[in-house]
Length: 401
Image 1 (cartoon, rainbow, N blue to C red):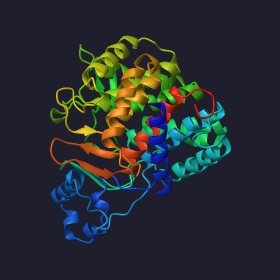
Image 2: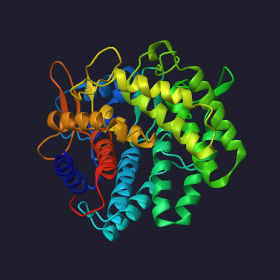
Image 3: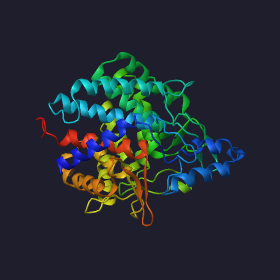
């Protein structure tokens, strides 16, 4: 199994490096130069239909309709996280995926790239996506509108980069993201705490995982600055999220009526964020919520053969985020070893069913016609980071092991 994972990962790594980490995204339809030349671009319903057409189509029309391959900040962050894992492997003596100096050079290059992708004009460092995004008919996110989700992934990656490079400017620029969370995001009171908004724009103000990612950013800031306000505000967000956890350990996605589903990878985000808060603040008062959430996560989103489910109550679509996130989450929770058999089955199933011979991973499998398009951020970056986590957890210190 370890040989199979290593071989699969090397194919993925070669593919992503050859593409210079640029690619398409499920939601990048509005980047089409054809659409931008049409008067339809001013009509919200047309924008929504165009995005969903690209997202749902099993055929990739992006080249034909002139959608360029670009860097996506969240995707770049995931690659950086993965290379930080590879650096630790090389430092431990396993150079199967590159020697230490080469990986360090790559980490510095990607860190600089990620900092260059920041959105301008906000209270602190913040990141968005490289495409306009119409979320239902309620609101339009212009490209580079910062979100707490993209920002959190970038913060975590850059801080892991700092721990390796000790580049003080990276640390300083990254920690300013706490000011973005506190000053630019809205807060919705709930119970004894608050819910941070998804973005600076109104609309998705009560998404549970997004709020927890805001808490995660603040807990990272507290780790380095010991700013008590950051720890206190993070705790308020964790308090609300835990209050919203159901008795069986599950979470719905958000509080709007159309956000009542329960899915795999957002559950993983929630657990990761609460655990990060716990590690950095040493506040263990939410441990029971992590335990309940983890039990629900493992028992409701994975079949016995390792097939990952998207939703708690149905299997399809099978989304590549789901097998990727469980590896990262269990690594963060120090629960990898006790669940290694499950994770090995999940990864084995994913390689067999969702990896192309060229190395990239598919977006989604469905009952009918599946979407096997290569998406750099959604598919390949998530699997790159997840497989690097898996390799670090399972590789011994000897070269080639």
